[in-house]
Image 1 (cartoon, rainbow, N blue to C red):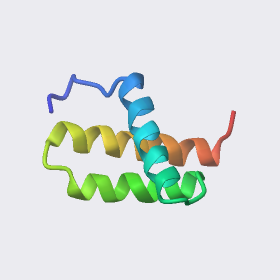
Image 2 (image 1 turned 45 degrees about the horizontal axis):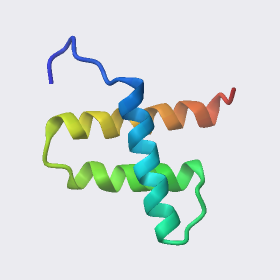
Image 3 (image 1 turned 30 degrees about the vertical axis):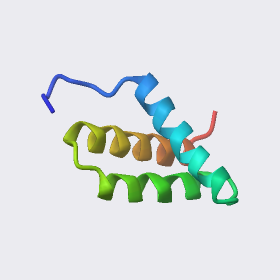
Image 4 (image 1 turned 135 degrees about the vertical axis):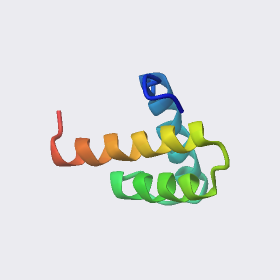
Length: 70
């Protein structure tokens, strides 16, 4: 990924949605900790560097939001 290429908010939103869908299908509660766990697992399995970057940025976003809610 290029240095000047940023992860878009839509990509973060989509990654959170996919992780939440996985949790719902697994009948697990949709909590920030569980979302981070799913995103970390997806990041490990990702083959595309762009996808890894999006998943990493999404994890960091969720961890920041957990520490400093709206």
